[in-house]
Length: 326
Image (cartoon, rainbow, N blue to C red; front, side, top):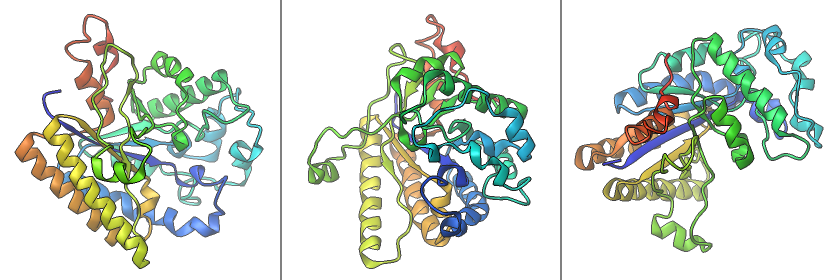
């Protein structure tokens, strides 16, 4: 890549991603707030010409509980901790998105897909825990096939994956490739074990993956965009984190490297104005870096496509790495 790249990915999961750790009543406002947060984020992305990947749980694509049951794979993960599996909860969820906005989100997925520059990726079909005890490769492949299938039903081609809870399982990357996945968000591994050094050194920026080495490509996550916190200590932490992100974006732009920011839409479900205000500051600075250094905003699928061409044409990678057609 001639210039640095700015990447955003969002883990769009609604209650499927929280059901094993937070009671619904406790997190209800965040999930309902997503209905307002996603259109607001899309508007902001359009204003600053920002691309993003929305890694979406496959069950959210479904129009009804019956469709979830229809598409659910027969081979399911046998987690040792049974609370991790959502399948026992299916009889308890609502019938559709109108009745149950916590487990269905097709109207929001359509808004995202119809916004230029936005990619719909996968967060697996069932919020699959790829490193949890009891699951296996066959169950993972069946789950990913279901996610791709429900995307295809909506006219969406799935090219990118974000593993739930960032549980990247290297043994499953060949399965991803076989099913047409060209990029994933790898885990951030700091080069220094000293927190103070990591905070000062811009340790979150990463080099671009070499396309000849592997597909899917590891578009390593850099930093989590933390939600607004009202207490003084939380506000100070958020401001310092934002300043760090601005500094590291500048370093990535100047050095021709990659900076990958991620969060969940439900993180913006409460305190929306404050969260959008900090995001606007980040995106405005990215736009400035675009003008000064050619710092480019890519979604994960588009960036994988750019990295694969033209050098990978002879190996066939460019044929695999095509952006989704929405």
